[in-house]
Image (cartoon, rainbow, N blue to C red; front, side, top):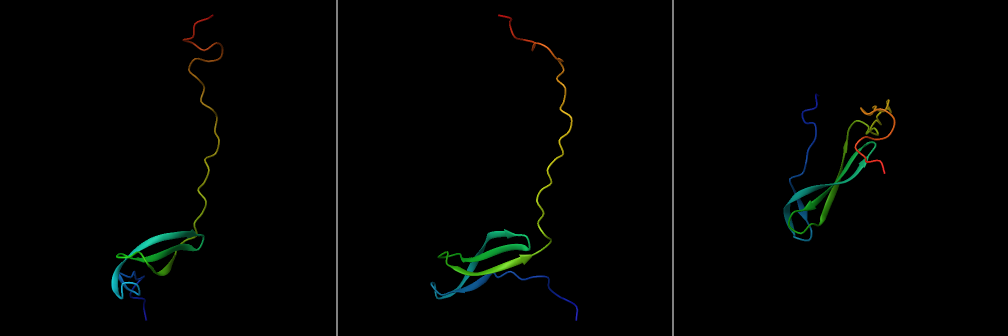
Length: 86
């Protein structure tokens, strides 16, 4: 059977502190090499109601730019222009 749904996200969960189902907020806890870890919080009292891991492609370190030749100053070498000799 073909997969019909890619993923689900909870919109309401039971909160033991509020004693009823409450809307939830999703907060990013960690960015892992295997995915991201989220926490569900009650919108009313901010109690943690659960966690979920979203897996995806591996997170690679950002590429550092290669050092290139330094730009030459338009004035060339020697004493900087615009300064008074003292």
